[in-house]
Length: 435
Image 1: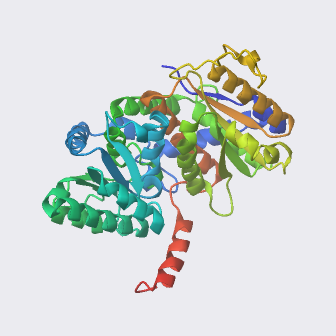
Image 2: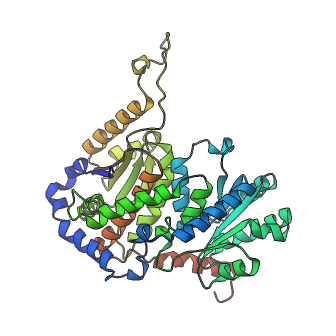
Image 3: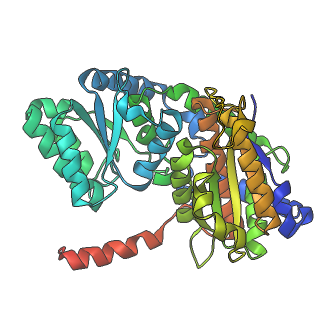
């Protein structure tokens, strides 16, 4: 097994090696809080041992439902918001073709609802559903969160109108609370297959529960390999007690050391487009876990080389308040060399014979050199390739590092009290009873 590599040498221009090494006692203490469950938020630590404890009978049932639903549909609508859809979308978009929507001959295509209140979005979605054979997964702990509840009501009405109530109930799967809540009650009344969101796993840590596993399997990916990658990374994170042996401790240590030196923003930098939703999932994971008590790095993201032609100027010469975390993939799935052109009017014949990965790597290395020289610390996280196993490793790596980092920062990484503020105001403005 090749573990994730975390390289911090290009982050030491601002803080020095000792500042990172001196973090070891604190991150080890934070790690012990995670493993012993003796700190704030300890009722939401079910994710820590989840890769070891996934129920085999649940997995078998889930795979059977996926096979049944896939036989009925070319498209699945996944309804959820925040952690109820970001994890699945991150994995699916990391693994699928950028052009999967145009080539759907082998497996269902996943579309998303419940993450927006845009009227035009739903009008466009319903037009698509008019012409597609589709199924639905609705994901909500309570069933009353406004965005997914509105989406489910709209999509369910369309489904019933298209297929009839009896067949519609066979095309819906609910992922919700085990005992209570509006969605649980609807699922029981209407006979939907139902999977449980564990009480001790918060939404942003839920990708290795049915919340993520069912949509990922529906998209045609091997969830056993995903779980295996997470399980192997868990063993590294739980057993490694040095920064060199434990990449999660290294990452938590360096980002906290940089934060204490005055860094306020962490930008995830991806080198390939498939990872843009890794950044979106990561932004929720760290922003919702650490953004408390007026503390925490602000998570942001850019893609290179695309955003070097837009944000690159600010990163290079703007205010020095940021660090970068660059996620790199060593081996692509295919090779595309640059062809020759006799006229060479574009002047790029010097690239003939080079693969795009070689060129992209040079662009990434050049970016690191430029940004480091401009005073931006850069952490590099490298995986060997993008497949289910390595994405499973990345999931657990970032989750474990997040728990360690949050405790090191001195906050409860597992609540999100600030999320409720906008809801109360929205309910008041909409005239909801009681607000």
